[in-house]
Amino acid sequence: MAHGSVVAGVIGAKKPQYDIWGKTVNLSSRMDSTGVSGKIQVPEETCTILKERGFACEYRGEIYVKGISEQEGKIRTHFLTGRVQPNPLIMQP
Image (cartoon, rainbow, N blue to C red; front, side):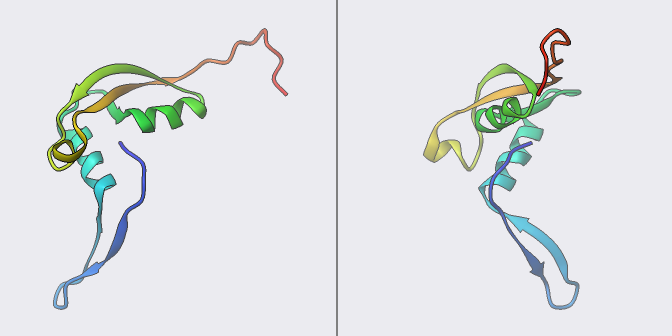
């Protein structure tokens, strides 16, 4: 899983197909292909956004991502571990 902007459209004259392109699509695909079975791998920027929304992540390490690491270096990745349980003793607004 990754987040960001994409370009979407329909390609093909004889057999039109909807498709999406962009760095986000490539990064998301690489998170899947370099991941671990049964776990959801996310780049650090996505982990930060998920944490702001009540999720927990576990740092995995840096990985080489074909098509991105050539220009930006290795990508810091995390595994999504689930929702953070709110403390019932703390009053929520």
